[in-house]
Image 1 (cartoon, each protein chain N blue to C red):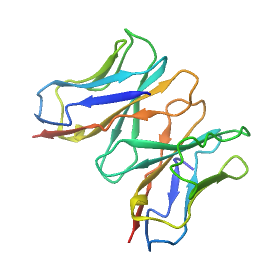
Image 2 (image 1 turned 135 degrees about the vertical axis):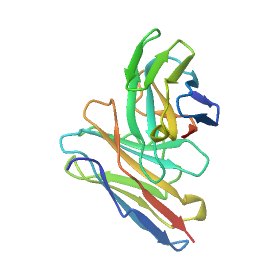
Image 3 (image 1 turned 90 degrees about the vertical axis):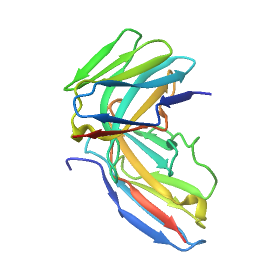
Length: 110
Length: 112
């Protein structure tokens, strides 16, 4: 069965303090790994899809990377508006559903 | 519309009552998903619709849950004889090519 584990559960950073969030996964065949951002009371907002080991994607202060066993979401010089829960999900080859991790709650203090 | 619209945004119902949750996907999106998010847990897949194909119902937790999608657009998730454990946020997402799903803001269901 697909497994997605995110760490840490919660992370508190000072503004400008770079860090990384981890997503470890177990899947028979990976079709795609997804990163979402979720603000309180809202639905998840799509950030990235990664398809193969070695792939990297960037958007503003965020950079996502992928290996055969895990993905990292690197946050460079974060700002308070980056505070949110970041969700990782995997899609197995031949299946349509996404399997989500429980997320990392990020708080960036000014 | 510009995004995925879900209604109602909040629903409080008595245990044993039936509820209907509605999802209006982005126009032209052929794939539609329902997920459930409980406090402290990850999103749980419920059901998937793709065009005119038979839906993937493998995530529905019991036969009290059902969903339909009319005309390839609007979807309704129905929960019969609601139980307290059904309390959660129910999220709908749509996608044009099964990638980069766009989620709605969800319906917060509270069963009292």
